[in-house]
View 1 (cartoon, one colour):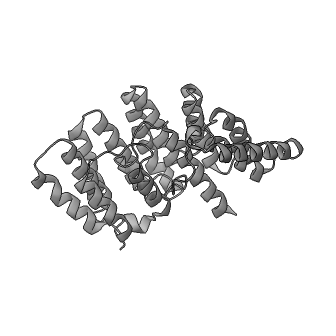
View 2: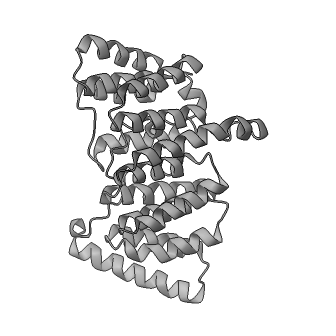
View 3: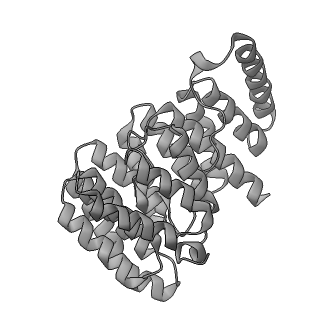
Length: 301
């Protein structure tokens, strides 16, 4: 059942992504696109979220199904299957705002599952209520300081609001908590993943030297980790540097990476650094996240 719910979260997250609320491509955000902790709110892009793209006949069918699940919830307001199905349909129809209430209900029913809170915040953000979204993320981070999905989403939101200092502080504060948190519970905060997020924030601020420094730190801590190598390659390529500087890095990253990532790395080396939100490249990167393991990130081929 846990895996089933994880797969549901995968589908819903990408349905929201395809609506376009993130505003920042997943592909270049190496702190998230290749996280070792494998956040399970990513996966294969199914569904969508553009009502105009749904054929009329299918839209009518979806609306009838939605009414059916709403009737079920009138009788059984805590029916998780009905709540999940209703949310999925509303997102497919592009009725993002209508998914907020059932997501809030799911969050209340399953406090042990942080994915619902992350999804709720993402939908709040999509509907324009950034303040509510930020508060939802912060509430989750207070309970789980190492929740990578919440950290990534909140830092991205802060960057969208032109608050890079706040985004940097969020991630730096998390890194300061890491030694004590990981002493109490090893692996509670994935230091490498958070550093990679911070490096991406620096890159977006054009603080390239700071970004490269932190990528070097991650690589020094684990020479088999392909992510910082790939991050540097993408930064150098994006800067327009000579290909002799970044092509060897792409090659090294591909050599270190598990087989499932090699094609993606080659595509990044040949194509543009960034990929549009909702693109095939983004979906493939997202799918890689959902299936990644710490051993793979460490270069266990």
